[in-house]
Image (cartoon, rainbow, N blue to C red):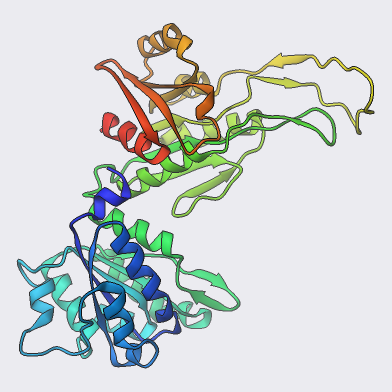
Length: 377
């Protein structure tokens, strides 16, 4: 189940309040629709002073709701048996957060929120305000109260003394998570991702062509499905916990620490098999050079010995089938095989091997990640 499939055919009420971040909602509505959702905008009077309702009518393809009429729109969408699958309040001001937490419904948005919470449908709140307002103990307590009611709160970006609205990608990921059914809820997933770099001297490194795209796709899909995801790598992925590691040794140390209480460990990284003895300074250029490489211990073997997590291994090369079968026999839950052309590419051919059988997938890294998670669930 990729993100696009989660939102396909779903109806989302995009509730907009009076933050300057309301200018981002046209782009947000477009992105939700691109992923297959039907979107209806609901706007407070303050929001209408920042973004004209016609802009969101255009962006959603549906008439923006700016007042509750005799059609009782809040009930039609968010009442029992209502049309909407998700109420997404973005941006959500401190004022609206407080009203929702207190059960006050004196605006279109708060009336929709009261109705949605009473029905028990998924609600996602995206705060946006000045940082001092976000740090107010009352606002913090109100957000905590909403989370206690099952509301998902998308953390803001703290920049320039403002709690700015989260990025479009993060908001959409939270929407997908809210609508996925969360089959991985309560599970901790640890993923090693991307390349390692082993120092040859103070300038040069030994590395691979891996880009971490597969690890990213697996991490975001795990988040969509409700897991607590920790990624050990040298990049930054949205919505997950990022643990920095450059070398194979750093990845080993972090993997053992994070996987100690994990439910699933996925070894999607191109972890160094060898490392040179680092030479101080810069090796002079222009002359032939021999570098001796020492083998490094396998991270997945160390995790298997130290953790009770289910293990997913990646093997490069179709000629690794015998080794993959041995790994399955030794307790690894899944082995994913792929050929070198898939490294650094956006798509490729992969073979998923489990004790139940094997499946060959040819598609984007996102599609492959979805197939891996489907086989694990």
